[in-house]
Length: 365
Picture 1: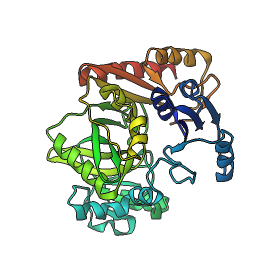
Picture 2: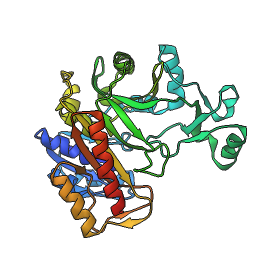
Picture 3: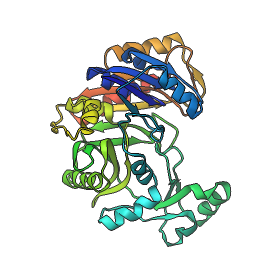
Picture 4: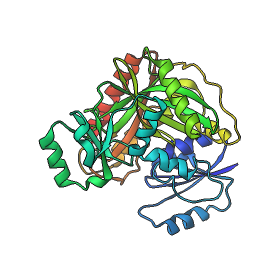
């Protein structure tokens, strides 16, 4: 079966698909070394029109399926294996989905558009209504900070939520439109200072995540997936508070936790995703280990030289790095440099390992 994966970074999709035995074509904006190794054929693209993107896709010839990564879910191709566009639109609107969660009895922060925040309690998390990654999220602590934000930004694109304190975490699931199976619960690494300068940027995760509320997380994630008819690989983001999980948002697409879920459980996410469109759901497997993933971000503009690329490629060959940039790659400030991966017997074990390796790579930059 020939599959075409399209995204800003397709390495995790391409490599998972290759491990599952597919012939893999990739359209990718980074062209990382491991993506190039996994894909049978690939094209690297920059800023392109929709027409140019379709021409690039057609250059691979006929394919059996197209799988779209983050940021490209609304492209129109034949044989797409993604959530329908109408579902993506609904799940991507964090403002409207908040009201739906409330009607479903799902814990969710009090939310309002920027012109109706007077009923909310500070501090507030101000974030784009659409989009993911947390890069543009900011905390607003009082009326003065709120007024300053509103003076400096087009607030029509933003919303406010009452800030919830706790541990960021997520549920990774596979749905078939009627039912859903949660494959793993994950701790999220958000705004970790030894990985990024951005206070709310997603920069990795640890699988599995254990709390006293595993059943509640699984139940809410399943309820959401079945209510909205989610298909394929999807994720639900939570904050774990002292009183239990609070749903933050839904990612109706492949998630960054894909690496650690596969490592911890042995489940091939891409294969499970494809089979879900035939109505087949995987059997959940208990994690056999802990797995950690970190994304090291650049603090400054940098050019990847042969030494840095070589060190990262050596780590990649040992299964400890991914998304390895080619020599000559230009990394802008606050863009990702590489992904690091570790496995171990305990959460503390993998956290210590990933911090050590991440700090080593960070010092190289």
